[in-house]
Length: 109
Image (cartoon, rainbow, N blue to C red; front, side):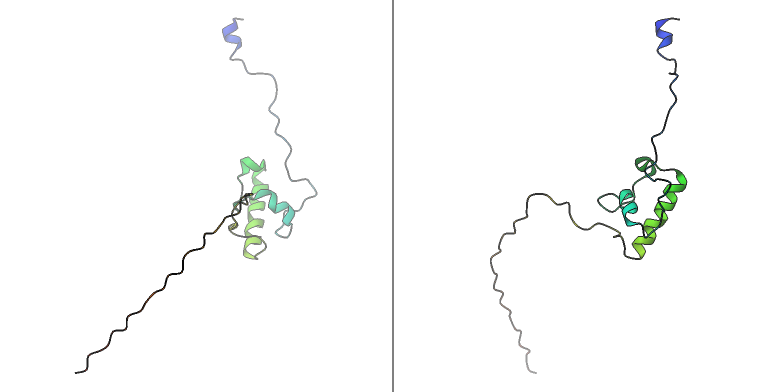
């Protein structure tokens, strides 16, 4: 065979998908918080199936469980806490502003 034709042949290795992050003993349930936190981003979003490496059925069950936990206030809908940096925000002290109010007097008729 020519060297140029050999480059385009597919390799004999089979594609092997890595193991699922959910073991056979894990129950996908809204009460299993340690499991649900693995499939949520830092902002509180549900991670995609491609990122999680889940099957379609597992992703559906995880999504339903996360939504149930959110409704029952076990999980936040959106993580409102900003990412914690080592720097603390310094708030500048603003000068006090004195406001004067003007009172309008009504004219007597």
